[in-house]
Image: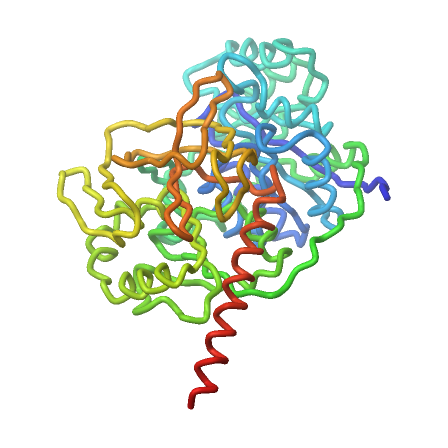
Length: 466
């Protein structure tokens, strides 16, 4: 059964990366929160780190409107389902508005705006420009047939120059400038090799967010943005049929070394019956014996190699669980942790869990970066042979044994094999997006439930002996 729901929504995109989209989105999210306006936020690319900052402000999960991961109807369903009771859905675009796969606009923020029929505001940094800023703005209006760019926001603009740029842009484009953010050196978000530092690593982040909110209240026409968002047409909402599920306990590695997870993946696992239990390979003494599965996500294990390597009691308990065939799924950083050893940028090698073949070493550039379609070459704990799922790869490390369980294919047709399966372990560099194939989390849940039943049976048999 399908109905239509009204979802006020807005897409913030930009002329390119480093224009300040994330800072602008955080400023708006915080300003709306101060006004008791409920906002559900989204990211249009496969990024993990920007959503962590959204979540810090909104205190709710952040979802991904990514056209490579989702078809149009599924993306509409995602927005309708998750924002139907909110005052606003705010989407942060990835890179520049038209930056898609290869040299095209495919799977870009532009695609998101079209699929969701969402009013779009471009973030523009006019530094070192005068009237030329209007040429850039007009270029974005006319590169594609586009009626959804509805205005602009200026970033890193001196207060004394804001009206100067606003007058030029509004005169030359006929569209409004909804305000600006001045240069705020104290809120600059530092980066490392995979992007911004994570939200938990930023000193005095709450103070920075408050400054952004207070500034946005004064310099951005947030009420006009809400009025613009309200012009978005209704979205279709289909009744969801959740899978029949039995309960099981799924460990989720959550600490400074392992923190990259799609909120959608975790929610789908919950819908399949999972009780998510936080575990820390960094600080936990042992892995709990009452788990029925383990999910080791990505993150920054390369920054914590001495600590991970020296936590031998946890590694030993993990090995014991693996010998009992605990279902273990690991992505990127989690995959590195299960290898024999990891070498840091200086070439120093640290022993790891030694559950998979091969070693890893940090490289000077990204390895096999980008969107992937994965096809299972054999039956695995997450997918039967032939199963396809969308994924993304983003890592500076490489392994001597990347695996052969799946065929990875880029949108340009380039192919290779990767992902290791050994016993009840499935692990590799790609980050999987479960909503692109709901059968994958369901199969993982089934494997965990089988393990749970066997574990409970063995516990019962053992108790009968005493």
